[in-house]
Length: 178
Figure (tube, helix red, strand yellow):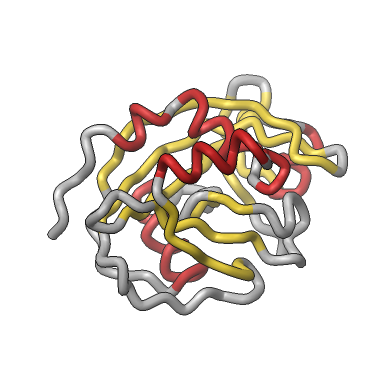
């Protein structure tokens, strides 16, 4: 059964099949999660080679689309568990932003994104789902900025947009560890 996600058609939020949303470049709902350790390093994931767009590129900790009638915070928690085996973190909603980006293969992400941040220990147990994630790593934000400047093609378009246009919203002030 195809995955249906909330997208706007003629100004009305409607459930639409995920691939169709991206092929048509429809404006749709999304969530992005940024997990930081106590030293301010960000947990990145490299998208699995089998992903239908942007395979093999580095992205923020987790990003996805809520199911029809799913609350953004519930979606963020669910996908952290499904993609990385992470549970029990306190997610802090930062903002809702909108962006549009070509993701290759004739597809466009035109997302209205709820941004969430959480703090976790550096030794957080991770069990990446190989269908979703091929690799993970912790990176200092200054090092990420440097890598984005020297090799942007290794990162998803949305991570490049987040770091260029929304860094202050996402990372300052940092949530307190629990």
